[in-house]
Image 1 (cartoon, rainbow, N blue to C red):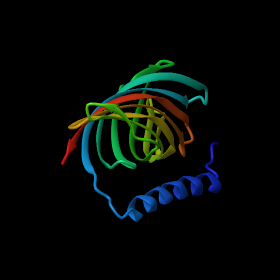
Image 2 (cartoon, rainbow, N blue to C red):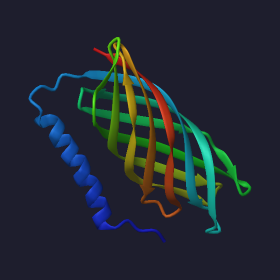
Image 3 (spheres, rainbow, N blue to C red):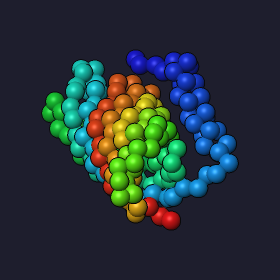
Length: 185
């Protein structure tokens, strides 16, 4: 049976709290709202009803809502994960996450385009169902790294995300994502 250590949970909460504090401590928080869509391919390490390990990948369609400035980005993401047939039963996953990303550097690329590498913390809700035997939900937590190509009216991002879980039947989720985000000014 999998257990989350108090140290790990406190570390994730502390990282998120420090990121939020740094953002609100800025004197000039001028930013823009973001509405976006994306696609991900996630790899899941799970257990089935016989406690046998399963590894499988599943694509998802992502809807995103957030805000960013030149230093920080907040993003909430709901992932519609495609159901997969694993060892004769259907595996269903749901991910609803929020992330706080620190934009490491603003590299001008010309014509108003800026490349912004980022690193961030991710936390949220995960649900896993396997056939009729497993139905769990709980916390997902981890980190991500990637880059944003910021333009005048929109941005394109790509990244890698790794998530641990409080669920007994889900060990980890990791994968790559791409997204298109429109700015709301």
